[in-house]
Image (tube, rainbow, N blue to C red; front, side, top):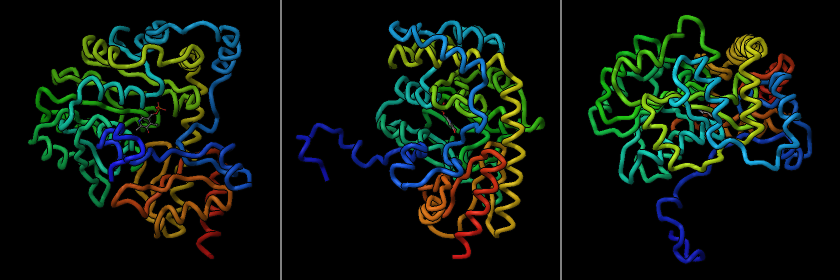
Length: 371
Ligand SMILES: *Cc1c(COP(=O)(O)O)cnc(C)c1O
């Protein structure tokens, strides 16, 4: 139904868009449920938070809040470039990498263009594309949770403006092997932009690590690799992510369609400080991997079907409508993310937290199962 109260102002394709299924802040949870959060496992955050150096730099910069930040975050881009072996001109930062997903789409998508991704998918890969008037085709994972490379290759026979996926994939968990990536890329035609979202790359096991930029470069395709400081680097609240692009011109186009001061001064400085503390980052990753194994074993012992995960989260079948299951867990102070995307509405994603949060979560799952 068109909205008459707004005098037809809203674009007709905006109305049917769902809102992003975001996690809940502890303060908001307290407000709504009247109890404290005991396990915050709904947003794939790092339970260790930022490194001490990042906290310190945010404090130190507080008095500079009256000044605009550097619009290009040149210093952060140089730091990223040095670590990635590319020139700083091919690096772009964003207000979280989701800001970059949006900006990339705005630079390339026209109404009616097709975006190809996987299912279950990271919500914004789909929603931001639909907000640009694009059509989204989603290729489901097979029952054995192998990365759906064959399905993507089959779909690439039709015109595709953007191929986008996360690996390790959020929320499902599987990651591409090098062989699978090479096979997939061989099927991508010129004129299709490849967006390789590696928000969880720091959690990959050694056998799934390879030179993604090098392999993408070999293909001669246009591509952007997306990374974030929100997960392994513990800076989700600061909002900073980055992209590395195949061409400087692609960065230039993205810059034109986005807000110039997307990354604030505190976030940029904190991210740069975070890059200097690899030990802190690795401690968080090691903790997540250890807790992931416990969560997985606990869920399996309680009879739940669990997808294999290379990220800091576990995707599992709740055995009922996931929103009902998650709501009962909220009654116990436990936050997870119920999946709303068909056909995974019985599935939920639980993030890795501290060892204590793992215990609280598994006890709560056992408790609500007995009811
Ligand atoms: C968390 C996440 C992001 C974005 O995170 P930002 O906080 O916006 O940097 C991007 N892609 C995937 C797959 C994610 O899970």
